[in-house]
Image 1 (cartoon, helix red, strand yellow):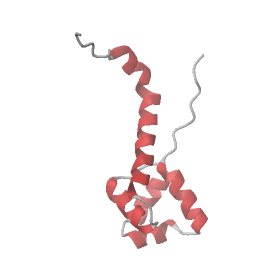
Image 2 (cartoon, rainbow, N blue to C red):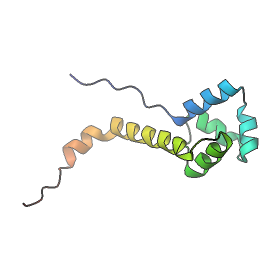
Image 3 (spheres, one colour):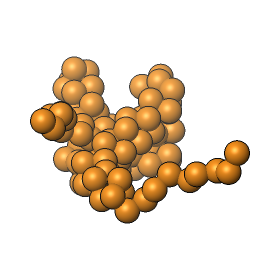
Length: 100
C-alpha cells in the first residue's frame, strides 16, 4: 500500500494568505519592495519561485527571517522532485558501498 502524500505547497500560497490577512494588495507589496507587480503575481500563482533576492526583500518588509521564504521554496522544490522522481532514482541509483 502506497503512502498518500499531501500536495506540495508553493510559497506563493503562504504569501497570498499573508497579504489577505494584512489586507495588502499584490501591487502595493510589489511597489513597496521594489519589484515588478507581475513578479508578485507569478509567485502568488505558483508560476515563479521565491529566490534569494525576493526572500531578502520579503523578510525585510514583513520583519521576518529571509530564510523563512527560502525554506518554504526549498521544501516545495524537494517535495515536487520526490513526487516526480523518487521511484526512478531509487531504481537507478544504488548507495555507495565502502570497503571496511
